[in-house]
Image (tube, rainbow, N blue to C red):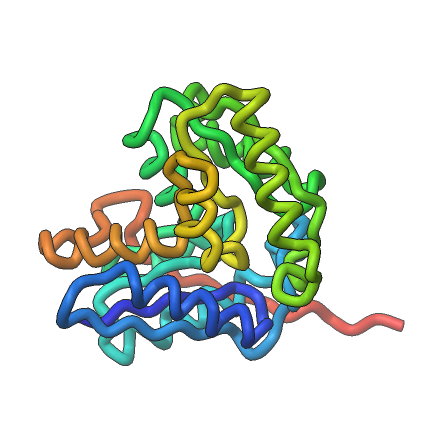
Length: 240
């Protein structure tokens, strides 16, 4: 079995971190590769970033399908391009936000989400409603560390831990969801320190794809996720 994990941003060091987390989540005989588009934003922290990243995500997934990958993970908490990707390929495609939120729902009555910047909280809440788990969310909290600084800011880990502690205190939740793929390497240690389950979406999504492939399940193509109808696509004219 071969699973392709797509980091929608172009930061290669984050792709390497994501690959490590994804590989640790699968069983024997599963090959996991992580890639990122060659063009697009270095991080995804706005609706604009999300839109810019989506074409690259789709191109990488389509190419991966031609190379015979059995399933795909979109490793950004906004799940950019997820529904479009399901139209384009038959293999299962799972976003880390959907996987993390659904997984956390198995672990307690409520859970809290801890993410990067407060400007992303509205999008995260909308995603929770879209996936039907909003009633399970005790609260959503930002540590105010930009995505690209998660690897380099010496205060990042402490800020994330503090945000998790605050979330558990004010929300009374039973679990934590880390709302950024760049936090993937922290889940195990934070779970031990906080004494609650801490869900990393990269691991959750990769394990979910492995399960779907083992069950022989693919994206339904009967209606909405059938291949998009062919049509002309026009390039914008250059004006001066």
